[in-house]
Image (cartoon, rainbow, N blue to C red; front, side, top):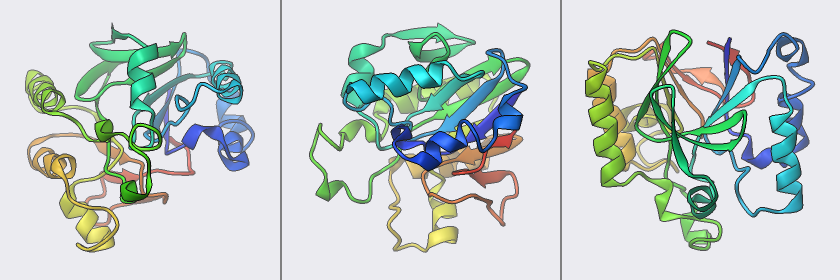
Length: 233
């Protein structure tokens, strides 16, 4: 079984804790560590290495499912790269926080239980001018040239066809349709890259976090925004 939800922001709110426990308790009760919950960015549980954060990481490890997450824009990229080495898993690259909590890295294609997933985390913080570099904001929130090349190469290796696309933000054209061209969500190299992919890639469904709402893009019913809901793939 595969489930997906949106930003959990370090599980610092009662609502986010409830989402991964009591709100969907009946659904989670049927899961095992061979089932997966995917978090579409802004995971936020690698932020300051505080006692509270370590306890929350352990709480998540003890949930009945395996947690897979992509990065968003609100992550401590320094700590992620410092504490968790890269390893191979199901055809792609991950960072393993604990036995059943893993970051699905950018530009990867994973083959899991007969389904293929393209993962590309990252987004641009609209409020970065009010944040402190390398304390509450990191330039690594957007992918570098190597990550973009790796994404293109991996997709070409899969003939530009996957079952699911998991990203934190959406293509530029979709952001314009949803929020207007002068919204708080700027065009950038990543959203423009997603425009390119949306034209060339064959997929069953595309899921994105970031926008703090739940819904389906009316002009593309295969494209979904996920936040507080937990959906089954």
